[in-house]
Image 1 (cartoon, helix red, strand yellow):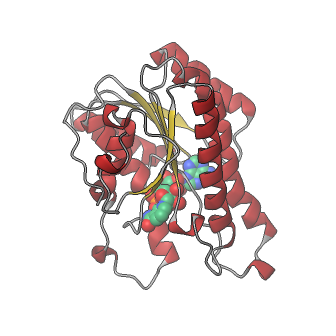
Image 2 (tube, rainbow, N blue to C red):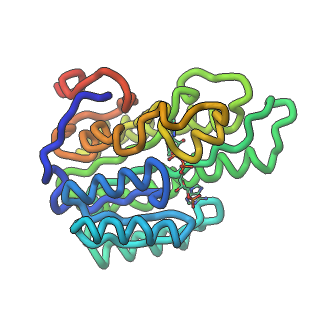
Image 3 (tube, rainbow, N blue to C red):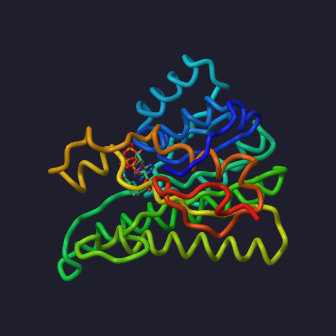
Length: 257
Ligand code: NDP
């Protein structure tokens, strides 16, 4: 695992938006951020799942979260705008954005890959991350230590047969992250932008992609949180344009100047 141990209050008073917060890694991240003091905004498409995470954060004594149900496949400019207005009214700024929600799509040769599924995967994994990030930038500028994290995958760095739209979407995610990081560097803004590759993690998506694998052999979402805490917290200040493995052997010393 990424070798980092966050102080228990490392995210105190931060406001962090997590997409896909109702399940899998997004749910683990929202709970973990709240345990470290953050007020979380839980965005996802299934209200019931978001409510479960909301209740768990409250039961654990974390700061009261906010819920924002949104289907990223059909979200429009006015939805993103409404979210920005709600965050500004309630919190006055945004300190962290974790673009985590994704669809796996079909594991199918490109030659017969269904166009409809291709478009769905690109819409959720790439277009929605771009649109959400674009609408959140003005709020992130109001933070004293803003951080944007995108979620990539090993197939976003090297293509693999049959991973189709998912692989292409993760390459696009890496490109989006690098381009935004470079732009914000050029304008000397302090917003850092990085990618996390979670690595094989015990979730619903992983089980769909690898039905023959024994889930109990994999780390759970909570186990891979050190890198998420590092990139959302003050210790990663100045680190930008990186794509880091949550289950790699690196540590902050490899990235901090
Ligand atoms: P899950 O499928 O377990 O969770 C994905 C989350 O995204 C769910 O909460 C889901 O909501 C949400 N989501 C999907 N579509 C939409 C949509 N249209 N609108 C809003 N929310 C949506 O996946 P993981 O937790 O495994 O994956 C999290 C991230 O990590 C993804 O970006 C994935 O690509 C990446 N990743 C995961 C790996 C793994 O081994 N698990 C490995 C490498 C990368 P709902 O529950 O309502 O469906």
